[in-house]
Image 1 (cartoon, rainbow over the protein chains, first blue to last red):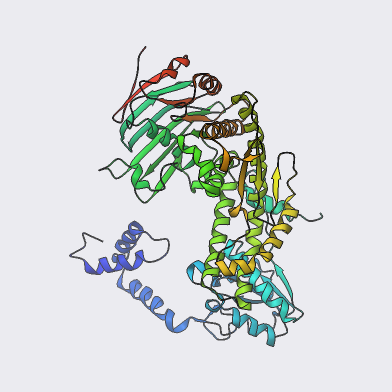
Image 2 (cartoon, chains in turn green, blue):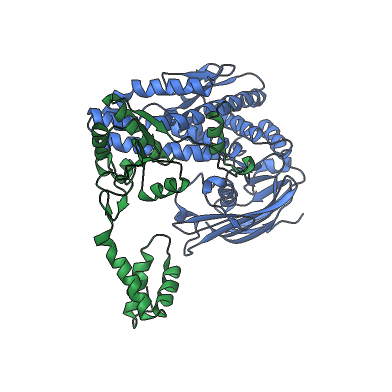
Length: 203
Length: 376
């Protein structure tokens, strides 16, 4: 950032904000100038909340989801169905599925997907941890809920091929692909539409 | 489909041009290296986001300038649209009716164009890569959703090949490589079945044109050769449905996996397919003469024009310097054919005699990157 030579504090603030996802130089500048006008008390509260993150938020040692207590509330809830594990890419996916309110099983957060181009193999995501869980727990079904991207599909396919030969009597399922609810056929892209057509089922 | 107005800024040696065009034939007349081809290239870039001469944006921008701009106002299905692209050395952006296009893949099919160029001969001499590229450029304009499928396929392939390059052949690695197969198969069969179908239709039409160019003395045939277990289809042959193709592809990937590990790349799939043309039963790539080669690519381009014609709405034709070495009689027939087609851009050098064969054309004078209307 040029033109801030006499305001190094603001310059630093803009640089840090600009590093956040979805925030370009213009938004970063606007946010920085907004923050400058806030009362000291609010600024301190914001700073304290952010600085508390490293000590308080950790990954659940079982499922890998974000939590403030270990194991996390979902893993330690006896009311949940411990025979089902839903495998997702990232913690925010857990949030989305929890919002539906219909899933009562457990989760496993991989923390990414296979992508050789980015140097990400099975060792870089929590696959070994998942296999350990399957061996020890009384899991009957595993739902592969990685994104329907090329990498997400490959990861699901790899997991399926790795779990099947273990002969644990576990059913492996995959989220189906299809039309969005409330969407219109006219506005659905061809690829989604053709997949929905291919995976049609008796009515 | 025709362009009413074309505006070009800082594109190659064209600094500034604004042309009001008529629906028919546009003759671009000028000596060599004055900007005739660049004008055609600009229109094709607007239609397909590709140039037949370069992959490098930098080369497309006038020396000493940083950004180039091309805009066309055109009529399609009775309504008028405005398509534009602006680019610097790093980025290229497209807008349709002032709205930015989110992905370049959404561009295909908006403005359809066929480029006749002396470089078309590469279809016969440039190996399978040039042939697949030509096929895909035509096919994607005819069937725009396939662009995304091709891009996704390329990505899945790159992932798999990256793995093959860094991997040992252990069980874990084998499973990892195999994990990319389902996506390759899902995307690859779509490409295969549509490209094979398009190729057979194209060759069928092209062989009619070839017969008429040669006065029915020679015949042209073509085969779509798949890399999978040596499958090949020619005219009349039935392309298996996608379910069968998926099965073939799966088997092929299993069969070639050892070879894949050895050479560290994927051997089965539409990225290894080829189109083999034959004149009177003999491989055109190997045996055709220069004259035959010219007639073959001309026939293929005319066929591409036909396949891109939606009822009574031909694509825009960009014809660069191809009549140059034709004899008078063949040239006459070729010009008659393309000039009845709709909007056609034709380049000519000053001295060329064939020009007299074209009636009712709008003439443009191209000199040193300046384009001006010629009266009379």
